[in-house]
Amino acid sequence: MHPAFSVIFLTTLIGAGQGLFLALATVELYGAFDLLPAADGRRFYAAGSAVVLALLALGLVASIFHLGRPERGWRAASRWRTSWLSREIIALPAFMGAVFLYGVVHWFGWQAPGVAVTQTLTLTPSIALAIVGSVLAFTLFVCTGMIYACIKFLQEWASPLTVINYILLGGASGFTLAAAFAAVAEPAQTGFLGAWALILTVLALVFRAASLVRNARLKPKSTLQTAIGVKHPRVVQKAQGFMGGSFNTREFFHGKPRELLRAVKWGFLAAAFAIPLVLLWIGVPRGSAGLLLAAFLVQYAGLLAERWFFFAQANHPQNLYYQAIA
Amino acid sequence: MTQLALVIDLNVCVGCHACVTSCKEWNTSGAAGYLSDDRPYDRDPTGTFFNRVQTFEVGEYPNTQTVHFPKSCLHCEDPPCVPVCPTGASYKRAEDGIVLVDYDKCIGCKYCSWACPYGVRELDAHQRVMKKCTLCVDRIYDRTLPAAERRPACVMACPTNARLFGDIHDPDSEVSAAIRERGGYQLMPEWGTHPANHYLPRRRTELAIRPEELQRADNPLKVDGKLPKPSAKEPSLDDVTSW
Image (cartoon, rainbow over all chains, first blue to last red; front, side, top):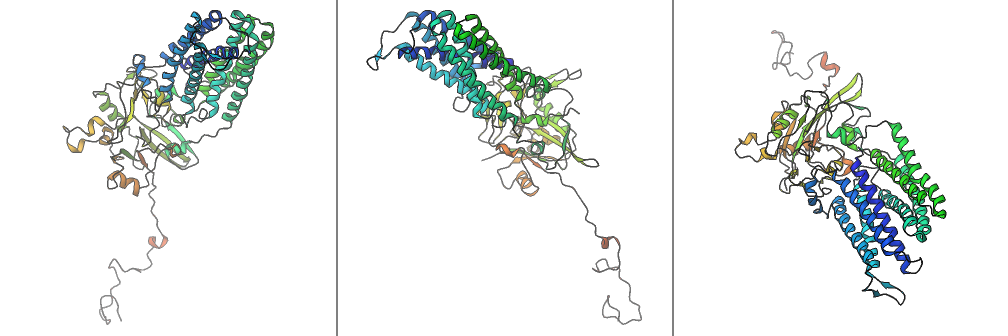
């Protein structure tokens, strides 16, 4: 497939936003059980929610560039019964709404109408919103992943690993950002968030590597023989029907040499996983905001490369019909 | 249930591209708007087409066959492009099985083209919506046309009658008979899309000539009446024997 930068930015930005929100919600829930020191409402949660909203809004802006007719984008919410894209378009604003409310509740410190669950645990509005927001964050991850995983003939994508990787990569970048953010806003949480960032980055590396191994062993189900229905071991295209380009020759192939693809693969394995792991390993014990921010920026750049590779690697069967100009 | 479709006979397609040009001519002039062409006579031309004719070579020289292969939307009975559309712009008509795009609802997200394994959907660069073969839905029901012309433009144009049009769910239709009796097949059956359009395979026409047919020793079947005439003096029971 041809990697579109609109979708690359959309998926990486909202992934980091969702991960950051999950980090905020995790701190909140750990705090509710007195497992972590309480974090400041405005400085940590409200400001953190603003960062999440900013990432999601940037992602939304990026997605507009993907549409031919963005002014009709509202229509996209109508087919949620069948289309994962439609579901994503509903889940994203719903999640943004939950994050906004979560930030507002923390900014104004509205903890008043709490429901006592046990003697020590009270379900405050912010905890309720943290749970709702987390469910929506995971819903959005699943929708984003399933957009790609549900196309069965894009064999590189049609795997549960696609959804798992969207969750883990978004989570890893979000928790790394959360660790950097905590180092500035709430240093007491840095160690906890940094440790989770390390764990998630390692997990993401394991599952992304698994998907690389899987894709390297794929055998395409469609061949030129099934594409034109001629049973012969040697079928060669001599003409694709036109001398110039078309949508079909531009949209479904990255048009880059194989060496670049290999370079991007090793590049993202280093930038999204290896370098951030080292930076986190050094930065977390020292609580160094600079190192942790560098870890996030390198990891985010790595994820841009990862997403580019994700698209470029997917081999669409329609390319069988467009192999020779004349 | 009706399922309109094209049946394309690869055995007689000569790759003349008449279906391509007549499709373009009809569909660029319709109410749905033009099919854009950019730099048609310049470097790097590009444009939107519903139909393409491609050419494949099968076999190794000198034993090769050239297969001209017209390709347009196959109007799948289980179209993967329809459920993925977030707006419902991409739909399959219940009454005749034609897969269409509502150009007023399409947001140009290209997801349906990703979900089509055949690469028959093209995003129009100027209208910025997805376009595809409509089976000339604005022709085949047009009562102002003579009945014989209520057929897709590509079918009308084909000089070798390689394109048949009809209802593949009607067992008595010309297309059903062609599929049944001439080995009609579907493209990429491995994805379960059940394309409505079918292709009729290439058939090599070979004469089976046995040696005894080339050299006549006698006339064993006695069919052509050229028998040695019995002598007039010889007794004869009939025209054949002479004893």
